[in-house]
Image (cartoon, rainbow, N blue to C red; front, side, top):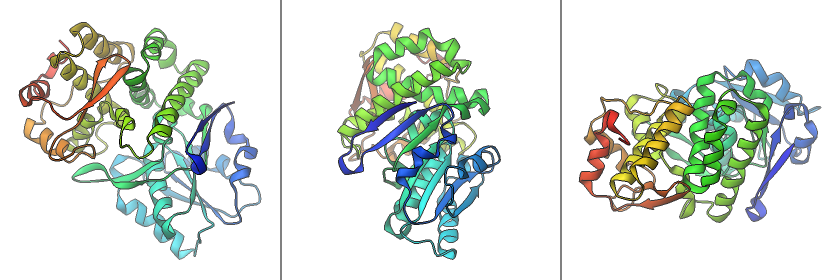
Length: 363
């Protein structure tokens, strides 16, 4: 087992990474209080892992809440359902919430924990690659709104994260690939050697080689932990973790939540960000082409955004992005592979050129 620590002073916590961790109740034991335990999952994950997760809490009063699966259900209705169950059962401030699922379950459960009785404890047990490398770490919680993704939420840290790599064996290949988009993001914005390693090991990673996946998850968590420790509330360097997300969130919202996986729209957004970085003269065309090729050819991700989203739609949605400031869209772009930057002064004609490039992105 690997342990990565997120250093946030009194809110610090460990990320446990390894095989068979759902069998290790001793990892959870130090975080149990005198209250009841509620496990929140969805109707895809619960049949696979709910019984095993309950065994992490021997002798505890454990309730389960099972939500519908999918990004389309990441909304205030889902949070209200959790509130209703907790209030009806008279669950108090000693209650411990457990998020058992992917990023959607983790975000919903974390937001419910942050707001129920003004804050109760929760633990993340991520069951997708995307959640293990990204969304379960760092304390971002929240839900979507029809006018924007993740626009309602809170920064709220878990007590710990339990990333059992065995659960990844039940993921469809599409879900694995979507998670790898967030993995590649870390190399592109922060660690060029990691990007090189991912490119060289893409075949084994794509085939879910357990050793390669464990190393991948560890490196991503170490990078994210380092960034979050420097900037917990995204006032500076943490914004780099949104590489590809400004474009990607606009695509996700315009297309309807759930029609694309989050990681798929991030992959499209990263190619658009690489294209814009090239148009600004920051990276060579060969570098932009390499980024597209690694995403598209090495990892089999969709890289071209839907053709039916207009420039006006993009601009409207991106101006609603959380990173927008003073009426300006702030983009995470690249000065080089491994060197991300945030910029809000982009020439409109260059941005429009990227938004309308279609198949010619990074070409």
